[in-house]
Amino acid sequence: MSVWGLDQAGPFQTLPYPGSSWQMEGKPARRPHQHIRNGTAKLMTLFHPGSGRVRVKGVRSCTNAVLHPWLKEELETILSTLPSEAARRSLPAEENRALWKSWQEGLSVRVTLPEELPPLKMVVVLDNLTGHKTPELLLWMFSRGIMVLYTPLGASWLNMTESIQRILARRALEGHHPQSPEEIIEWLEATAGGWNRDPTPFEWGGCRAARRDRVRRRRHALGGSGACSRRPIRRRRPTVIEKWQRANQMTH
Image (cartoon, rainbow, N blue to C red):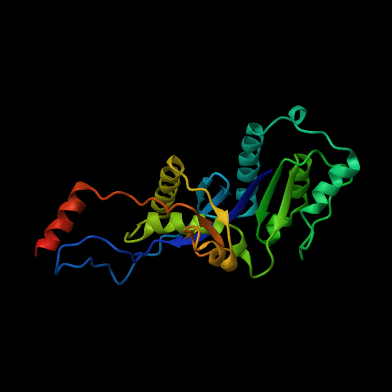
């Protein structure tokens, strides 16, 4: 089963973002104490934890009129890469409906499924925004074999998409001072493109699972949620200038 997560990050403002950087000894990085409010940017994100790949689009606003068309287009593209219905095991109508309903067991927020359901192809995890419960959007997703799951109130961290958004925002903005929302969008999308060149799969594991596995293997927490990885996330390699600055700082 193809499981994806949807979330919107932001708003990101045009202000100095604190972060670490290499500087000459005695010459720390200085940031302005004031900034001009030139607007904000947001990042629409679809994340596949099993592969670590992420689909993003930066926008100035994230209303239903902006989010829903982008989401439908991306889901259509993802569905085209999944096995065709002829290759999938066909189930009787009752068993197929039971399969759909099994994803709602134990959930506090459930949706009413239509009478006729196609074979289940994908699961999308979302938070509890009202726009995510629009009947037109839900019927569109159900008709294409997409099941939606809503995280409980106050528990949006259960959606691993928040983890990848936190990582992308930190890599793109920390230590920088963007001057416009368009600059923020460009940096975020470029960071996501770099991530997809060597994505890190996410695995689910809570505190108890981490304690059980601590003796056998090392696990790496991702973005402050229950997601983790069995290998550390690779960081950007320092440039030649950064290496020279580091060596010069050590000699002094």
